[in-house]
Length: 301
Length: 266
Image 1 (cartoon, each protein chain N blue to C red):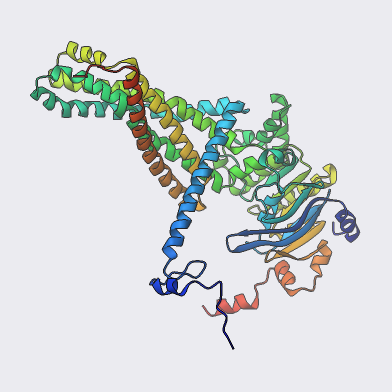
Image 2 (cartoon, one colour):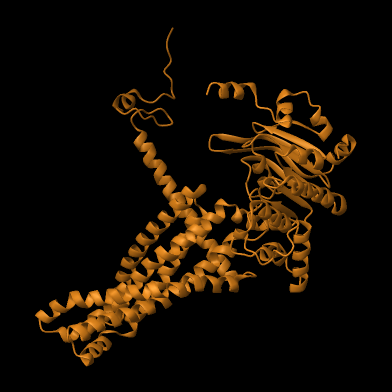
């Protein structure tokens, strides 16, 4: 009797080529890693799509106007995120400004331009370290707490309770948090900038002997409105990134305390990476934009 | 309670209807072709072992979970395929008592009970305060408006959650283990409340419970689930006299021979 080959069976060559014990759903031995790669790629794309829809829904609710308790919730969130973060942001800013002065002074002094330290410190603080350090501090202090709070609400069915009472959880919980973070991050960045400049001034003028007039003269000469705006625009975007990721991770966290803890970790890591990535992209874009509109600007030094 | 004729008549007028509903979480089949009518103005009790899908069934009624296949109707309108915004009018007609209360941690007790009232709108602050006071009094929690949920015991949270579920006088109330964590006297108060809501306000109740005393007291219809399917249904008396040994073991609270053998092997 002739044996008919099974049309659904995997090709013999593929079966022979596979050396591992793993099998795909179709029975292709040794090619499980391809299936795993495909699965993780699909899941990553799904997660990006899900996150985009989540943020889109929050923006949609923002455009439609605030809900009943929105203003009260917004004020509470702004207090918890903003007011309570001021000390830590100021301390961080002051130390970073001081360290910048400590590291830069010997180099500048060696080539005889220590008097121009103010311009480099102020531009570095206002454009880069102020916004980024404020954002990283907020991602840890505020983003983590936000993910933990929303994750706990999900685990204890409070988010389901909102939906069951015909209240949209994104509108009720996410919109005030994103708005508060977007409003407060630039304000906190200004605090950080101010203390960073003060820290740099203290070391430069108080310790290293740079003349007070020189410090402020070159600081003002090197810092135009565009430089200040770059830092503030960045911090607006960082605020949006921190709150969106923190809320998303909270809403999608797994069950139990372990799920909440894991969501907090993922929230911080994702925020941190996205802050750095966004900063890089914006630095390139805004510098090109600046050079396009104001070409042939003099050097800071 | 327990009148077969009443149950039969009401079944012809279901307020909620499940038609061949399937639901699975990964490999776990939770609802396997569930077809069920919840009669209007009556109390239906859902019984079954833990993890059999009773709470999942309740969550399908308010659209917190969607079936993989099958249809769900509320007042003869299909709701399983509706989006969140289209579900809002139906959700406003349903109160849901969650298993662990699900009180909002960031709000005081009074604000929790006032939340659905504020959401619906149309009430002055004084009216809202009066309603909150009245509902908290009904569940024996008067004077606790200023407390935080974190300061309450499990049973107190459950009672405040019940006050919140009844705050808007809904047509249907879904009770997920309403008497769990309460002392026997307080449990009986909750049972009386479920009966009172049905008899005086015509509220349709769907009660998920393991408390057989409560089930027999409040049920017009009892439905027993096992392995994602309905194994038996009937009035309280019919369930009491059901010949199925699994049903008898469940209502009498007896471990199976297999469970006992496993214990003896320890």
